[in-house]
Image (cartoon, rainbow, N blue to C red; front, side):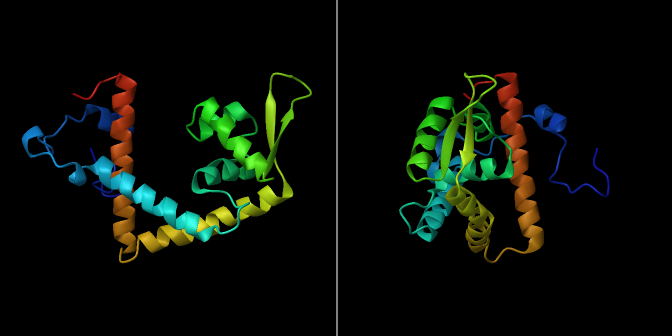
Length: 179
């Protein structure tokens, strides 16, 4: 069902749900270091460490703190609950993360005047300045990790990763357990 304008590796989300599992991995020959999960985790760790080395000042945000800082800066979220959803964290983890950002003077929590149950998050001037650095630092680090890739390979890689994500989301939506 693809046409000339759709690259082969991109499928509509409904197509991903219809895909049948394949046997790329077999229990008798399984090697953890060859699994996509292991490889992706190592990449995330390497990127995280590279970002951390770029941030030398104690008040600078760490790699896990970049996402909420940037989401706040972009206006994608304003409350603890919205920010937790946007960053795919539970509210307890988000609260601990915000505690650390507040301790660094990068944000502050302000109780809503309209609804006292709601806590809004605001960036400080230092937080806004740090958030403006996010695209520059992450672009630099990710480009370093993609050294040697052509533009076409980069687009193809993103398509493959989106397909894996689509499959994961389809499995989660169906509530399937992996055996």
